[in-house]
Length: 210
Ligand code: PRP
Image (cartoon, rainbow, N blue to C red; front, top):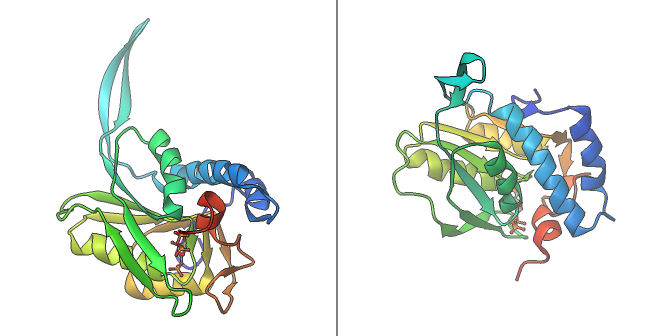
């Protein structure tokens, strides 16, 4: 844990972070790495999924087994959060997806919501907000504000890379929400980019914004 954030430090994750950070890694490989690291982070962070007991007949008897018993609402923060969704959908048996689009103003670094496809009522829902980058923490805090205000009972965030100042800021607005990531970097530059970071995940996944 770093700053109350679960950091998945498995060697297989660290190994993939080398190429994820590398500025010469091309977009197709970057997307594949986002996919793979998202799988590892989600696997570790979702250990408390609700389960139920079931019986299954094997060729030689009856086994008592455990199944996942809840549907998770994935909330990717566009654009970059989209890169994490397929991996988590493959991992979890039951998911739904609701998109939220945020654009960060490059001067003020404040995020503006340009798409809100969250259900109006999230009462009782378990929500996983996905965004590869927690930089200043503003985007994640804003989306968590929305999700919590609509009544979600359990909210957590999955990221790939976070900054220490971003975690501290996020913690001021949402001290209790679980956050998991693959690595925490020490600082931000004047443009709000994580340093050393990996650049702009959205651009590396999808190209420059229109
Ligand atoms: C980036 C990134 C996060 C956000 C993090 O998105 O993908 O969503 O900034 O910054 P913050 O923690 O300082 O709020 P960006 O605005 O570049 O949009 P994009 O994903 O469409 O490229």
